[in-house]
Image 1 (cartoon, rainbow, N blue to C red):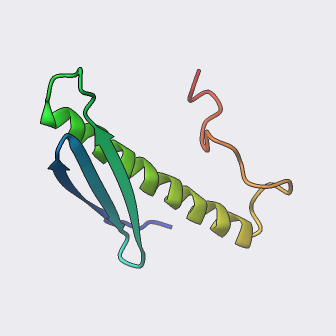
Image 2 (cartoon, one colour):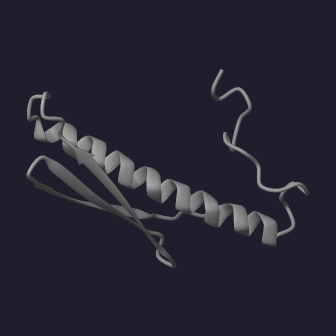
Amino acid sequence: MNRTLEWTVRVELSEEGGTTKAEAVLDTGTARLTGQGIARLSPQDPDVPTIGDEVAASRAMHDVAGQLMSVADRAIGEAGAGRQDGPVPPPYAWSDATA
């Protein structure tokens, strides 16, 4: 089967008083997953807003990725293709991916 899909991710950032908040929304065309992320500036650290943006955004996208993997795990189980003793622990792909 050949097919092409396009999924979009929108990340919205806001910063106030040394706290950066991010919301990441994955839109697959048939479903939407929303993740949250927060980064806080330590008082002893220099104020570099882009670092807070990156940390908060990465945490929000990590949240979305976890939700997406849970959806995939359920779909695998419903299709009868999963392991009999439960979901496959990370990493989900090649066994040498972390080597």
